Image 1 (tube, rainbow, N blue to C red):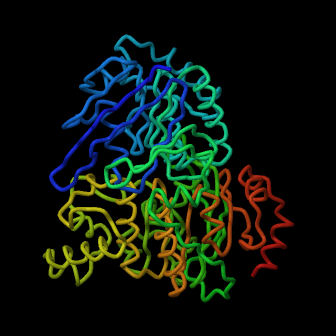
Image 2: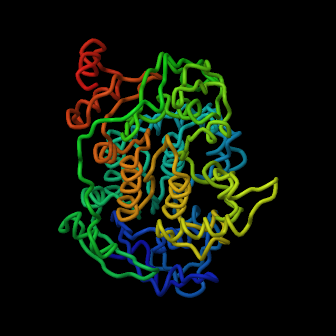
Image 3: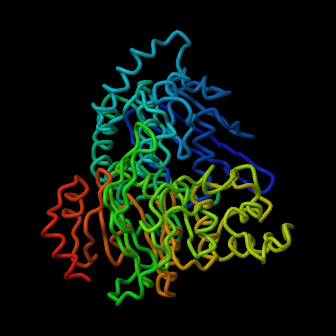
Length: 510
């Protein structure tokens, strides 16, 4: 069978690193081909070369047997190559339809395009409202926009970079059905994921990369998650042991927290009550777009519209306080969106320290202590094994997983009393994910109260002491992790919980 895509000796060098070092790759028509590697292995750079977003220094690209030089993404799309990036390429102030139209001919009818978006999104189980502005969407919903945009092009090769990182298990299954159907129709798929079980369930072939080189090719259906992990990082990540413990004092309390929509497409928060104690991790599960964004904004101080006593931090009413005042009282926060909110892409890692560390150690009498922030950034890079040239590297130059490790590390190093984390291991390889989770557990064991919002149920079951579900702006009663099941949490994610029964359960858990 003729190959759809062939890469021969592809090399890409940057001043501080060789991202791709003599890469060979063959992808057949109708093949779902996984690219597996830890953060910084060179996967995303290789995909950008195929898509024309990055030019290789050496090597050849063959498309359907013919050598091509893909100068830019527009040329890639003309060939029939579509890509869903890990970091979204969407304009916040435009609607879903307008964003998708940017890559289409100028005479595209927006009304017809909206109809096609609605049809495709429902056909593939990725519901979207075409008229919504992107700034009102959650990360999971932005992911749907990117996937639907790619599917509208009916590509011959579809590149997916961490496509399920913020999708629910139900949405993942629907996406897999879509991808299998596309493959049957002859579309080739390059699939980057750190979820080893997904690769084993979906992909026909797997190419493993480490430090910019191909280190192995295998049939993932014949491998275990443990053997794939060993191929990727040289070891299996350590398991986190579940230990039941008595929680300490209440450090974060929500009391009848209700907030109207901040925009027409937002979610109203309704009578949310929750306590988070010292020395425990409370996990919040839920389908993207059910109020997670609104709750996080209210807790972080980005949305200070709550009644003062609706949010208590160590017993103090903080509902109307801004983010800076809450941080001074011991609150740490990791947002779900890394670039633009968690970090400023064009600033160095050292300068990004100032987004959360503004105390006497880093700023004195209004003057930045550059040596101090440089040393702090260096210590985070070392402790959290962040692959970066040094504190002077810009945040935007890091791979997604390495930037996530840095942002989590920046908050952990503040030694907060309360830490709120959204999507802690989104797009992070298995080794780095295990490290981040271990750091969160260590912070809990040191007496911190942690609230973790994640759409990774496996993650929540691994690290949480208690679980709650957010659905349609309401919060379920909590349940001990040891008494929860995936089926029960999945049922609650649809908003189907028995208030009386779960209230009794919560009393029993207290």
